[in-house]
Length: 124
Image (cartoon, rainbow, N blue to C red; front, side, top):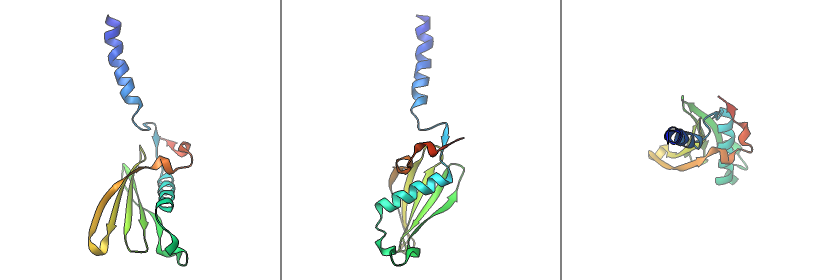
């Protein structure tokens, strides 16, 4: 009976620690930019930028200890801010319209879904 008492808690600890993202991986700034850029090209209509590509772009924003900010600028003046968690790739999306002082959190994506190869993540 004693082996069961010892192994059961250890099994639970192992089970709950294995499924939580990629604890041994980190998203790089390049991964964050690449994934968000692919997402923006898939989701947003870029036809307005055919004649003038400078009216729409994706660029890196601020960086914190835990996240990268990637910003999509639209020809309308609106911006979409993507906050990419460095450890997991979970990305929070916030749309902002500065002229109207509007800010809305519009959802989340898994950045890793937009990278060609998940192996592009580097070890910590």
